[in-house]
Figure 1 (cartoon, rainbow, N blue to C red):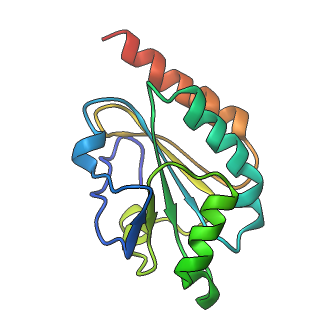
Figure 2: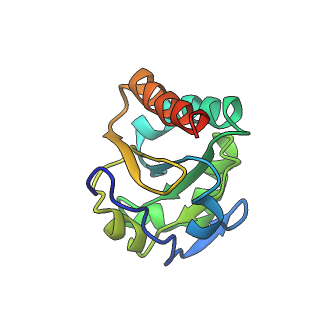
Length: 150
């Protein structure tokens, strides 16, 4: 995805954990952080605490959606995904993308990966990898601050 492109529709999930959401429920209300992760990704697990911190700190101002994508056949195990979500306190909606439909819609090839959309659903920031969480929070702040100017 390129900056300012609209958020893809959140369709094609194998299943949803922690409740289902849609693009229509997210866009127009507040900014959204969508993060891609995988049960076999060590860096994903390392950064999940910070993602959960963002989720809790900005709960009134920011939507957070997790997208689980498989990196190997073992990652398709729904029980493993559920237990990992519980273990890492992932309370936000989890789009289980075993068919990789959303991964393809985003053009995403990496985990962890983070997409920050403004309240209008336009991509404002993308980053991948386990470092740079301070930069991610700065970008979230920027989008939240712009909302206050409306």
